[in-house]
Image (cartoon, rainbow, N blue to C red):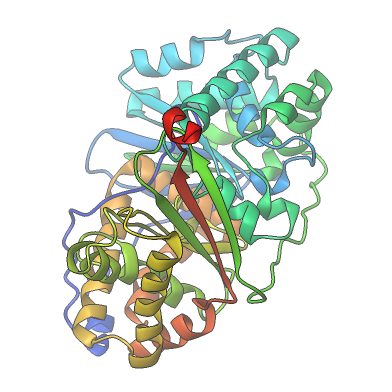
Length: 460
C-alpha cells in the first residue's frame, strides 16, 4: 500500500434500527442505486448516482491480490501496485498525482487478498481527465528497469518502517496467516519478503501487467454527481479500445476447519510489553455461518463496549487493549472472497505466560458457545454494524470502491443492499452455533510476541 496500513473505521451515522429482529426487518433501508454495464472488451462499469454535491468517487478494481501473485514472488502484487504510479509514455512519472491533486482531488491504492484497487475523489469537472489517466496506465504502463528498481526500494523501505523496525510489526497479519493456513495462496506474506522482491525481474512485471491488468479482469466503480449513461459513454470512449486478454486461472484456496492447535513464540526487540494474536479459521463467504461470524467478531472485539474489552481489559485487567474481528486487519467481511480468520489481537500485562490470557479469551468464547448472548447485547452490536456500514457508504470514494469490489468478487454490486438485512437477521442461536463450531481450541492458532531480553538481561 502507498503509506501506512489502512484499516477501515467508522462510527458516526445513526441508523434507525429498533430492538428485536422483527422490528429490525421492518426498519426503512437506504438503497444504494447501482447501474451496471459490461463493455465489449469485458470491462465492467458500476455507477451509483448521488447528486448531493458536485463531486465523485472512483475506484478501479483489478481481480488480483496476494492469493494470485506468482509463487516465489511474495509481495509482488503489492510491488506492482506501486509500479502503477510510475507513469506512462503519455503521462510521465508524477503527472498522475500532480493532475489529480492540483485539481483538488486525492488518490491512493491498496492491495488485498483478492484484489488491488486504485481510488480517486475529486470535483466532477475532473472525471474525464481521471478516466483518461486510468485508461492510459491500463493500456501502456512505463515498465522499465529503473522504475522497477526504484519501487522495489520504496516497498522494501515500507516493510522496514511498518514491519521490521517497529514494535510488533504486523505479526498479527503476516505471521499469523503463515501459522494458521496450509495453502501457499493464503499463508504467504503478501506484504513481501526482501528475497522475493529482489528476485523480481522486468519480465515478471510485463507478464503480470499483461495477465492481470486487462479490461476483462477489471471493474470500475463511480459514485457521485453523475448520470449513468454519460459515465458509460465516457468509459467506452477511453477504455473501449483496450483489448481483452486471456482470463487468468485462479487457484483453489479452500482451507480445512479444525485439526490441531498451532502455537508460536516470538521475540520482539522493540516491544515493551508482550502481545498475543489469536486466529480461528472461518467459513468462506456464501456459507450460512459467514455473516453470523462477522457479527460475532464485532460482538467480541469491536470497540470499548465489546464483550472481550469489557471483561478482559476493564474487568479482569489482563489486557491493555484489544482489537480484531472477521477478516481483520485487511478490509472487512464484505470485501473478502476466500478463506479468512477471526483475529483477536491485544497487548497484555506481563503478569504471566501468554497461554493464560489466551485461555481467558477462550473462556469468554466458550461461555457464549454454552450460554449464548442476550437480545439486548446482540441488538446493540447489529445496530452499530449497520450504522457503520451506512456511514462508510455515505462517503463517495468508499461507496465507489465498495460497489466495484462487490461487483468484482460476487458479480453483483447491488448485493451491498442486502447486507443490512443479513446482519439484522442474525439471531442469538446463530451466534451460539458459530462460536461452538469455529472458535474452538483445535481450530485455533496463536502467537505469543514477547519483548526480547535487553543486553544486560541476556548477559545475566
